[in-house]
Length: 252
Image 1 (cartoon, rainbow, N blue to C red):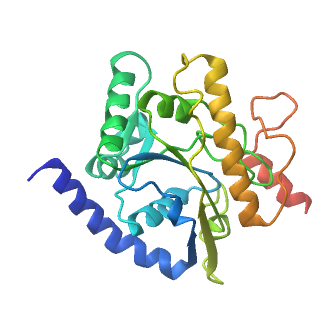
Image 2: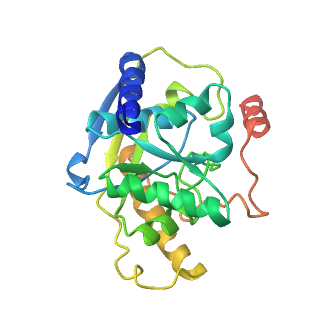
């Protein structure tokens, strides 16, 4: 049996267990499906507000006939339970530097060449913005898009954080949560694709991706986003973590 067939079987078994459970916990609504590219692979860039985001986004793509492939930290592939699952479903490990980086790029390119959906969180981690708006993005997704030539599809979801709050340990099952996911049109990077991958080019591409994603989040929330994007590296902004959130809760 080929590796591709084994991966599909693994996906099918996992989906048979996970998707019904998700449907019980949340009332979902998928929007903008017509914006998914037809007949070609692409890079999907979602916002990241809670640890169960990958399940929600994966649920969406599986429903559209894709076997979702995530760009994930290489260290996760060594975890006792998660590691074998990631390897069995042919997720893409992020290797840093040298031959490792080349191997990551080759794996990403293979997903795209096969017409697949490669999911990359451009923020790199859960947003640190206190109000859960997309924060300043990292350049990894932009670099990958410009290196592979793949279209970038921004998407946003909202509501999963009510099921499992950011950094939360317990699911809030009742009442049943409402989760919406909205797919946007491809991000226009056409004028950047022929340029050298300088810091300025990567930052411009990243800014465009984050701007489109933020617009989608604002649409789902029915609110205006902040004028400035949260920058966790700025000395004037306090990173959001377990301690910060606990202190905030005590003050309420």
